[in-house]
Image (cartoon, rainbow, N blue to C red; front, top):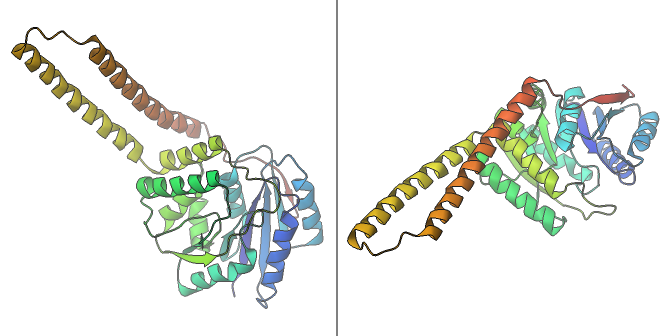
Length: 308
């Protein structure tokens, strides 16, 4: 068996993280002679997560800790872990215990079969209605914008081969989106079914604002389809406005007594004005992200490395 690296982004997980690490260790005992290491990336968690990471690093020589200077988000934490990992296989999972570390053999088995990446698939997700809705929306948007195969299910629990991880970390811009990076590297991807546990402690760190920001990261960094959709809507609106103008002229010629409609004129102005502002905002989003990337805004800033 080849060396395996585990990458775990950590945020508000002081109570769950030791259990996740213990579960990984217990599972890896079944792989005799297999080397593995664990990278715990603290995304500037406001609780005692960093102290838990320090303690785990003191107790285990194969656990490494990375502490961010401020909160950069889950995907930046994944990139930091991937960049420091050395395993032939890299497994990424959550810190809350909902992703079953004791079923990692299913993911590794698929990699051994020849797949380049493997995503865990949940038959019954134990998330809130808001998170489930966000996941479904993200799945639909990823399929449309990034060309994700319809049958492929993506989640935060996945494993990739070394060459995929190395290609992913070549991306150094400010807005990483891990799903887009995997799809950019390979399409030889499989799914395996695993159980999804209920959250025992705390709540999800993803808010509506963070989810929307994450979607924008993916779609503006890896696809120009939003701009093409905007172009299509603009063209449709222009054609609709042209034919409406012809309709108004013909109606006036056939019936000179028809009063010119102030309400319809204002409705058209408001509609087309709103569409123009929407398209300009989308273009501005792209330009702003290009500007930030040209200024070398970092994906993350590491305050401290522990047990390296």
